[in-house]
Length: 267
Image (tube, rainbow, N blue to C red; front, side, top):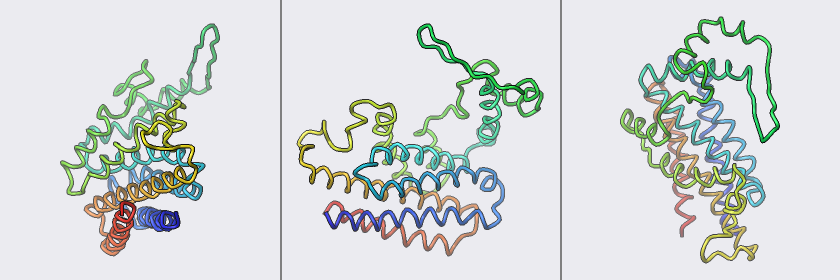
């Protein structure tokens, strides 16, 4: 138990350190796409910080950490994808908020005989914005549910792998190990409310509280390690567009420490 707790502290520190490097880049005069979509990097850093904070009490918050982990994966993948995708896809990303905002002016939900709606003033004035016209032309004036990209997350990772030299194994591993459980937890299924304590896992005694606690601590440590490694690869991609030699060296040090601690979890 004590070993797992030490691992968690070291791995959480590694994740926080990698996020700190990514956050610090905003002070360095970024240019081009890095500057234009840095808000995505800032957002993934906020999500990562929230995961670290919840990780101080994983036995209570692990399911919530996994839900945020899915958001973290999406944001990190999108950030890397936007740095390598074609101009049309990149333009769609920048236009999509105008399309979404336009459709948010007026919405309606039905449940049986009950209908409720939200309607805000200013839609007509907003419609006159040239960006709105362009966005609605690109997406839809009638369908409010279109995504900015037609590619799913695996297809985005495939393009990142094709267009860069970073390792995408942790992108795939994180999607494989986190995505489905996060969806179940988010939607409140019985599995989603209990997966982290192993209720339906063969050979797991979920009534043994010590065993359950050790399981959660180990999986928390793995979560920190996996997300930290994902940020490390992201920084390598950023380094091909922005000079950051010293910070990349620090990131590599944290990455090596992360891998060392990760191996200890399976000893």
